[in-house]
Amino acid sequence: MRRSTKITSIIIIFFMIIAGVVIARTMIGNHFKNKFSKRPPPGIIVKTVEQRNFQNKIETFGTAVPIRVQSYNIEKYEILEPIKFNKKIKSGEVIVKLKNRNIVAPFDGIIGKRNFSDDIKVAESSLVINLEDSSTLFVDVDVPEVFAPYVNEGLNVDVIFSGNKEKNYKGIVDSLASRINTDKRSLAVRIKLENSNLEILPGALLEVTIKYNERSSLSIPDTSVILEGNKVYIYKVDEKNVTKKAEIKIGKRSKGYLEVKSGLKEGEIIVAEGLKKVRPNGKIKPIKDGAKKSKSDWKKKNKSTKNESKKSKFDWIKKLNIFNKSDSKKEENKNK
Image (cartoon, rainbow, N blue to C red; front, side, top):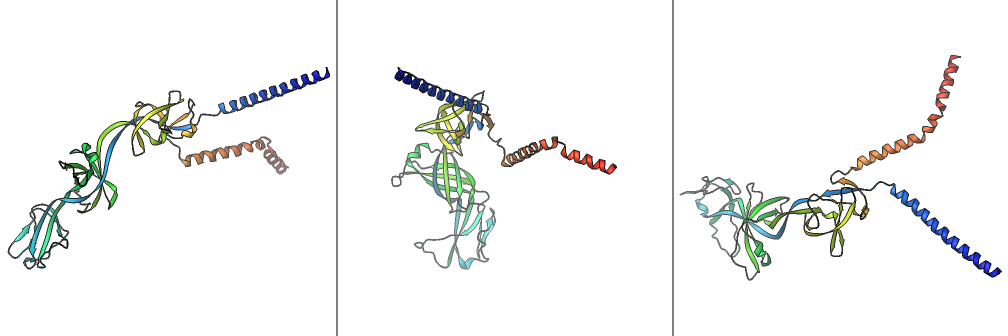
């Protein structure tokens, strides 16, 4: 009898302990749930899905060539006045004065001395000069044959000169060969480039980017995507500021933006930054891209809050009217 009573007591105690643990966990859970539910939703940078220009690119190199070059072979003994090389000449102006004749410029250009390789022999008594029109340049490039079907006359071209990499010069595809070069497995393409300021010198090595399949597509910042294996996800934000995780298909990347092929519509709002703070079906406080608070603003705000907190700490002393009483006593003594 005593043994069964002991067993019953142990079972009752055991169940009481379990019940106490369950109740304690529930109370703790409710406490933290209430605590965190009172927290305001996090401020998250959002952006509206909009159209942006995208294109495919062919990147290569080429050498700048003047649009027009006229060479003159002159006997040195015929020259009456020194030739001013690297001088701009207008059409109709005299390039060089000779004993029996004058050489007149047929077009605007710059006078230069022609250089010869070692295998070309020129008499020491002779001088060869060039009149070069560099206001427009040609750039001959080789495009790999895999890109040949996409290259057409009139395509836009970006050109960068190594002497001024910060500036982007604009050109177009002027012409292309009618067949593939079997030795190089490439297509010869000529680029036409305006150079009215004569910033690019003939012979300069240029970085050439031929743009094709230019189009306007939906775009999102590249900071807004979540990569999970071969799939790409983003967070949409609805009218109640609740986030929904959605899969999308992306295309090309350009200047910090990704091309969206499917999964989004123009005008929809997505999370642009701060993905780690976002949870599916969670509420956020949207902050439009570009409306970020500066650090100085935050510092000012923190200073003001600190000052307010300091003031509140010493408010109880003011309520005691200690200083007011002492001041009143001093006045009474003076009157006496």
